[in-house]
Length: 431
Ligand code: S3P
Image 1 (cartoon, helix red, strand yellow):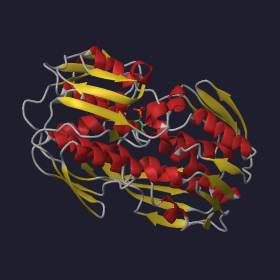
Image 2 (image 1 turned 120 degrees about the vertical axis):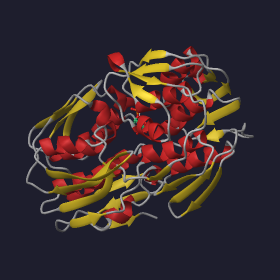
Image 3 (image 1 turned 90 degrees about the vertical axis):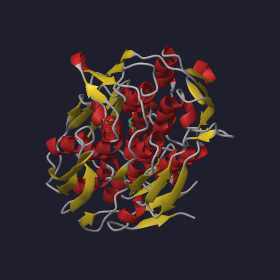
Image 4 (image 1 turned 30 degrees about the vertical axis):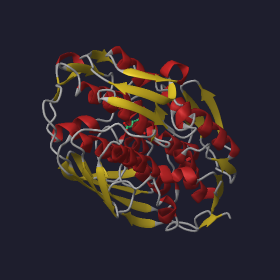
């Protein structure tokens, strides 16, 4: 297990950062959606993280020919997806497992999806049940809730489904299944979750549109889709660690370049702004999604905040936001965020445990936590195998120093995180 020591900064920093990791959600979708075309997809700036490499490897096991040159990927889809001769390993990626479930349950053949010990402990019923309800044959441990999952692909019925959770993974799995169903299907969620699937599939020629009562209508594919030609923008969830850094280290400024500015992805930056940070959004182009830069300038002490709405729009950024909350004036609260309990770790428990070890007063609720702003102190923090916990507390270390144990998980989403961090402070790896 590798650990790292982060030294406190000696002074504020000014940085223009154009090498934030490419977007994880979009990269996964590129690997999978290219399989729905009959022509070559060209993807530039694909995330070379463990999670998204697992999705590419699965595409290859299903018959795609994949060429990787630096971060550019060419995917030649097979004429027909083939039954793999081994299990399909999603690694640590919930997005990989849940979306492949939706994609494969309509494909002829037998498929086994598995993952690492953390992914094998995460709930899959949220996709397995609605897919079973439309005829998918999926089984796994705990009656299909836990991977390894076995899928026997076959015919799927059209559906009208109002999801009880606002989850882009559930929505995407159901959309992928709907593309193979016998007739048009309808899907509804209470809050629009990240909509990369709808945007990208529409861009490839799929017919997915909003209809009455908040439903989207999905028409099954009658022919293969157009291929993808895309440059993956940088990941706002990864960029957010450095946005927090610039708001807690006095006299700092950062320009985060070429991020997706999709409104379902930048809510955490808006909350940081509400806490008093000086943040600007500069939209530059629109290719499938709005893309542009975000600048963040230190603006004095942050103010405590309550976060209880639009949770799906900032769920991945809550661990990093907890560091901003820990330095803010007064009490901050996160509510309605029970979903945090089933992420790469139980993030309510991980955040509260780690902040307490840094001397911050906090209390844990079933659906969130309360954090009383104070002075962060150096501690030894366990990542719990969760990349976002490891990176959040590395950022806290800029103020007080930090030892972080079990940092390998960072490679799932942000392999060059420490390279960027070492432009701000000293990072020492333990042997
Ligand atoms: C993702 C959706 C979100 C998010 C995850 C990526 C996606 O999960 O937390 O990191 O790419 O669709 P849920 O759909 O479970 O909320």
